[in-house]
Image 1 (cartoon, rainbow, N blue to C red):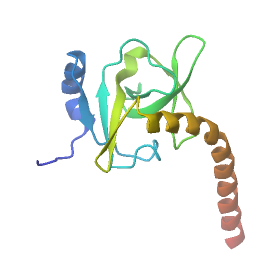
Image 2: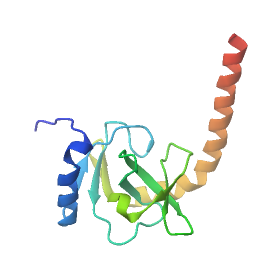
Image 3: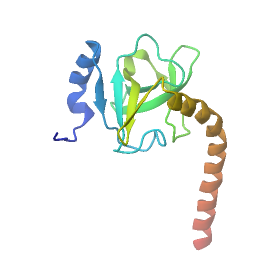
Length: 156
């Protein structure tokens, strides 16, 4: 098979039509915001149209008001029902995402040819564990950033 890299913007209407007709779409995401779950340009995700509202810890593809496409995890809900998203490798939470912004929800992904569904035991374990280790990881990341800043200042 000949794989060609294309931009989501170029095929978003086709993706929406496929999802709206009950189909699924697979693609290879780029970026590091969902690491360690998804590796930049290596893993493949499977999307489908959500059945109703997204749930806590679902991973969804959505479009920001500025037109950017983002694949992040639901980490909460605002009082007005809007979603709060955050990448697994990020600490900044993005608020104000509505159902109208949502394109699809991840139901499975492939890593090194191995298939993981959103119901597989290993993926459920990952989601549960990540919630507990994300806070300590945030502290370690802050310390790491401070150390890097101190080293830069010392070099001057």
